[in-house]
Length: 346
Image (cartoon, rainbow, N blue to C red):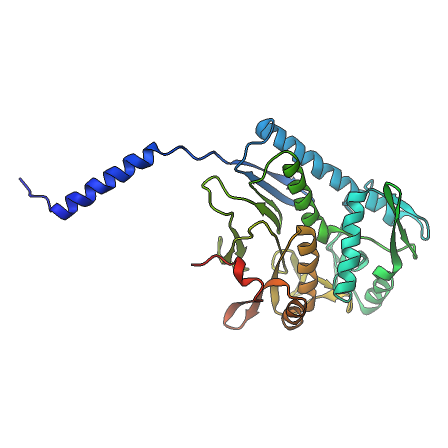
């Protein structure tokens, strides 16, 4: 017979008691999670509250909302409102609904704030470089083509005017091409959040590509956590963990949407000032603001700026910003003091 160590026996008894007590605790509510495709990317909605009608109703309501948004702002749909505006004549008011006008106004405001680093009329350049509905170029666009496309760009050529229960959108040149794709993910996250609040759901995590909205806690009673992905070749690698605490988080990066031609990598982030894809070392920019739409506008502008200008701009405007910069030693993260409180402590 082997004698048992009394300390080990006590530990075993305590463990048994803890397991028994744990078994008596009420089971936490199960989370509801739906996902799907939209706007050329993905969405995921996770709830720790019940939704009226359950998961089928949640899926139906979210996808109906997203389908309506696509009919308004998708440049890939020739029948969408934005496509009809782009195909229409100059100096002719075009009626759009309030939800779409909010996105346009955010684009105009962010363009002015960032001195044109974000430009929602940059579509001709995006298409020229092969990142829009048009096909990818078979060769690098020449300077003449870039200059011609730049003449079609500028938020000063776009006006938005309230008119009763709708808004009037107007352009001063026929070739102006409005592209809201850099804002639509954030807008979608905000609209889904508004839907959930209207339905009495107050504990949720919404992801539409890089735009995140969250509120409350997960099913375990803990605040939602979101990873800032490290742009490396290692699957699942992340740079930091963020606890948004009811705020919105949006991340833009140059490491996902790109192509290579003649040994050169071309990013989908286009600088309106040069008419060309950015070539600096900033590979990811994350922003925390009250709305995902605002964060989605600012993260793209920061990506255009590059690391030094982006950090200076963020500090000047006291923004919660997290940047990932590629160096010879690997990836380096820099963030503003306003971002620090949202980082999960190790």
